[in-house]
Length: 132
Image 1 (cartoon, helix red, strand yellow):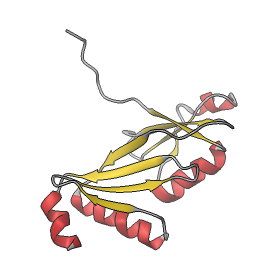
Image 2 (cartoon, one colour):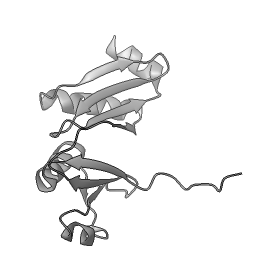
Image 3 (cartoon, helix red, strand yellow):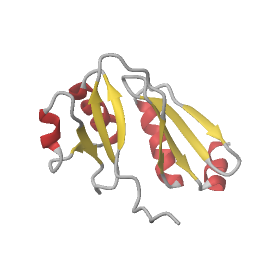
């Protein structure tokens, strides 16, 4: 039997410019530079780690010139939060796709380096009644 895990610590996200990407993640998603882990960003090949205000979500931005985004990071939200995200994306005129998965709803969007992200809610009926 495997030992247990506490959760996901962080996700690597490859970007063409860490500073510009950090600005985008702050402006769009409210993530800020982790002061505790900022020392790693002194190395040009090291990560610039961003976190949410609660310190639960960590994205490690790695600057690379030649990369191809291949993964999708999915964030969970309540039904109310999901609708707030949808409204924010509309206000920013962002390209976003809303998908009905029968038991969940998802919003798909990309950052400035074409990394794909998803915001998912399992408050299915709540969203269904408001989007239809």
